[in-house]
Amino acid sequence: MADERFLIVRLSSLGDIIFTLPMLAALRHTFCRSHIAWVVNERWKPLLEGNPDLNDIITLPNSSILSFFACVKRLRENNYTCVIDVQGLYKSSLLAKLAHVKQRIGYSFSYAREGPASFLYTQRVKPTSKHMVDMNRELAVAAGAKLDAARFPLVIPGEAQSAVQQFLASTKISRYVVLSPGGGWLSKLWPPDRFGELALKIWETHGLRIIINCGPGEAELAEIVVANATSALPIIVQYKVPEMMALLRGAELVVAADSGPLHLANALGTPVVGLYGPTSPDRNGPYGGRDMVVRNLDDADTTYKRENSYSEEMCSITVEQAMEAVEKRLAQRAMDRASQRSPGQAVFSQPQSSPESSGSSANNPFQKLAGSGR
Image (tube, rainbow, N blue to C red):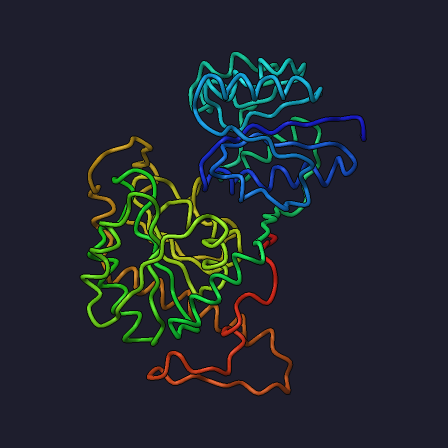
């Protein structure tokens, strides 16, 4: 109905916002003429800009009390009829409550990130799905949405695409793999020296250049990767969100642990290999079933406790295991490309000794805007 006015509360972080996009898409699919807004931390606003499913983006510029109540004031002025708190924190549920919205939907006590936050909802959802994407979409169903295929609409600004294209041209890189060694807490990360060894194997086997995605505070990790990659000579980049989207969108493959860049690449339609230890790929893995996951423990041993050291589970993943997954995903990508060619179209292979040679459609990775359906 056109008179419905929805508000989504998902303030952070990168991967969790990605997991929420299909919930937004489900709302828009059902309530095609309704007003839908999203309140998000300022840092992550670029993930939502240009999204055709959104009417408005409201930002929290910082964590101050003044900013919080200024946001509350704006929310009250917009007369929402339904708010969906996907975050499940005291802060996010309080935003929903103070916005004076009659219908407030969120997760039940056992599923909310901070259980007591659920007391501020008028409707509590106990999801039955395994993956966070589908769990979030159950919140949309509680609001009356009908589900279609999951969509991840993401828009890469032209300026960001141009900046990345110029970087690739200046470094004479046409085909590349992105390794992202950081993200989140340390116990779910793979040791950076192994990323370096993997980089060398990819370079020697496939002639693909290696780019290291480096987030804030991750410079030391990136330097260790480079030191262990020796002759692969990886290049470290530290981009803002729009440029990172462009970089990931153009990659042949992205390898990362359970982290925002992994989920962003997956949503953009880029092939990924996910390295998992304490966290569950059933819940937080690459969505869609086409990508590779490496994990050496049973789901019963899953934990989301944030530890400040590398876990035994992540350290149990060998470079050989990761490389095997890389080989399989690259082979699948090659098969997908071959199947998309017309029967009479010539196929050109590139020699491994000339990784920068042209002649493949992969040399122009930015021919279309981002956004993938599952």
